[in-house]
Each structure stands twice: as C-alpha cells, then as structure tokens.
Length: 219
Image (cartoon, rainbow, N blue to C red; front, side, top):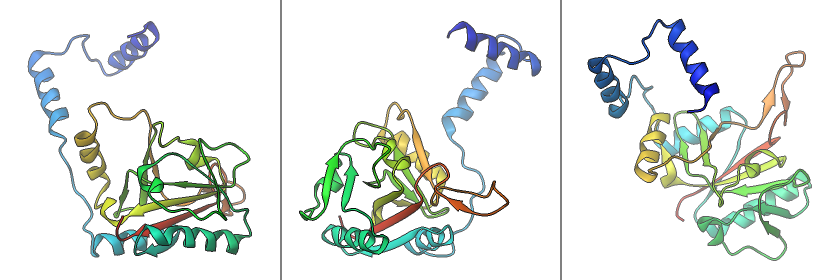
C-alpha cells in the first residue's frame, strides 16, 4: 500500500478505536463473512422477470421495444432515428451480439469508443435487473464506458435470458464469470436527469437524454 492509503486507513482505525492488527478470532469471522456473500431481505417480485423489467423501465421513462430476434433490431433503430429526426450514424464497439446482426447500408456504423460529437450509441449489456429496471455494463475493450454516457441517445440491446431477478444476482454472476472483476461496473437506470434547477426535471444532465431498450426474445 502507498503511504497516503496507509495514512487514511490508520485514521479510520483510530476513529473506530480498532487495533492495528485484528485478533485472530475476529479476523477469521470477518473472512468467513466476506466469503459467504450472505444475501439479506429482497423484495418479492409479483410478476415474471420480463414483465417486471419492462414495467420498471417504463416507470423511469425508458423507451422499450420488443423484438422476436436480432433481425428486427435495425428496423427498430431506424424507426427511432426517424421519429427523433436524428442522423443515421451509430457508434458501437466490437461485440459478439451486435456483430451477429446484419446491419443495413443506410446506417453508418463506426466501431470505436464514443466521442463528444456522437449522437447515438448502441451497446449490448452484461446483464439486466428485473427488480429495478437497471442495465449492467462492464468496462472492457469491447464495452468502452464512453458509449454509455457521451451520446445523447443510448440504445441497449438486451436478450431476455440476460435478465436477473435482483441486484445481488449481478455480483453472484460476476464472481462466476470473472476471477478479477472489471475496473468499472455501471448500473444504469433511466435516462440522465436532474431536478436541481427549480425542482424541474431536465434530461441529459450528465449522460444520455434518451435511453432505449430493445428486448430480444432469441439471440
């Protein structure tokens, strides 16, 4: 550890009146607790996962479109572009799910991280949460975080099998899939908005103005 971190941790221990070195019994109990990943009380979901997820998305002003398969995804995106009078220019990263889509020539696609001038980003997701209507995106070379936050329009393609019941299920899934967790785990619920100015909702405060979810039945 570096000296700054050592100093901060020493101050925390001092304020809590904790010794520099824990007693062996307490150390073992803490290690067991960290390894157990105990889940506490969770809300009961009254609907099936897909219905619950869609309901939560609509409550927080997310546009939801259903697709039977990936072939319908470009049509839905073109419809969104036309309804919002947006340029047909998309930015997306290399992604196994998105790469399997037959994209029409009328959509101009660039495979890279997003920049300030980009208007529409299309991403996949690592998972989705029915309990809160949240999208889970991880930072890695095939999922740069700029795609989630810079463009005004974020379109996320979610396969129904990616929906998990509760937030705690995300961490269980991550522990199965990763020995070392990704540097950043983003949980996105609703478009970016704030009511700091005169208690009036403004969209696009610190991220996309519009969030669209395309829910695909079969990949």
